[in-house]
Image (cartoon, rainbow, N blue to C red; front, side):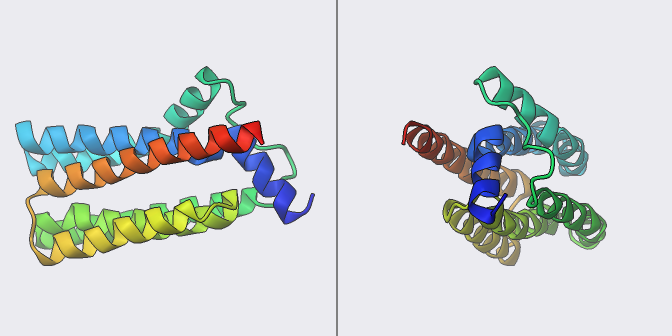
Length: 179
């Protein structure tokens, strides 16, 4: 399997990643709601817990919409997906420690981390859309952190960006599937 075939395999199995972006957006919207209605401290935990559910929820969404929710065994890009997941997990303590110093920086820090992870998805799926998504999240994360935005605002901005990109990814996937 060459790189182009491996990317196509990931696109077929995971709907070009659209289902995962949607699942992530939902997790961010839940965190925004918790920050707005309960507390920013609880919203941190809501995003941590919601973040652990992104992959399984994305797989369920993929399957409900007719995709397999998996890539083929032996897909050489599978290791890139795993490596980027570990990088994300290794970054979580850093974002948490930052939040202990300044709570308003947690969600912007997570936007930077997640934005960086999405950049690897450009290779995983063979889609420039992920460069735009990663850079948008990172840029907004930096701006929100610099501006000391309220946690609920930071979470809803991140959620909204992901929702827009999820819709774009679903549309792109539908066009790619027809071609």
